View 1 (cartoon, rainbow, N blue to C red):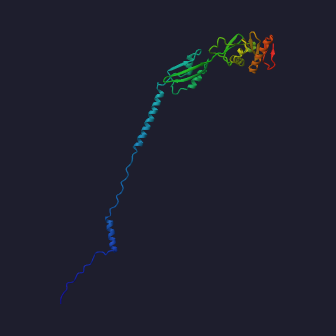
View 2 (cartoon, rainbow, N blue to C red):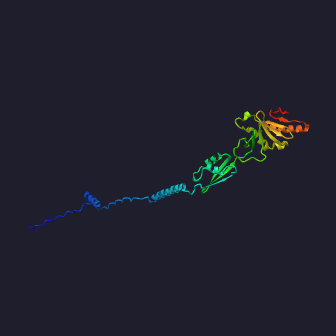
View 3 (cartoon, rainbow, N blue to C red):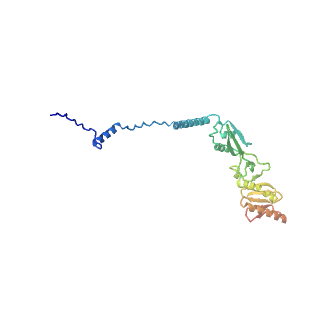
Length: 283
């Protein structure tokens, strides 16, 4: 009897293709050796150097401007040290400078209009203009009041302008300036001389229009009475009673026509009263 050596059957441990175990092993191996994606590094912090620099420059510039403006205002560089005054003949220039009140004030902040208004409040000043004269001066141009003529009552004569306003201080009128004689009663002068502005304006208009030259008359005087107004006294011709300035053109035209008529007819008339419109009275 022969003994046989037992045969050892070797088992194939390799997994069959397509088996579940093989798939799991493959997945595990892939999972075990797969390289993961690296984590992103944290972002770097950005410092806005340009914006900070621009802001610091703006603040520095603003501070420099404020400092410069303050220094410019407080320093003596632009303070009034010289006052030039022109146009004064009868007005005291020192009074003009004192009224302006601009000495040692800053040229930057002075009020020119207010200074001019103070100067115009002085007697004899009609108007004033104040201007800056950099860096340390101002120029003041003064227009003084100009006398036109005189108003005389009870031996007292006062200077007036062309509007009939009395002038305390002004440039004197021309040497041939008219004088209006006010034949006033003492009672009318109790409160002082009362100038009739309409009469002054009427005489001024007759002179400015050249009415006397056109009429060929040479007035020798102007007389005012409260009850009849203005009378133009004429040598070698009838006087003309104007009264007031109403119907000015009609009165002048009528006066001219009557002078021509009287010259043609050789009539003697001492006075032409023009106060009543077409009802002209010859005396």
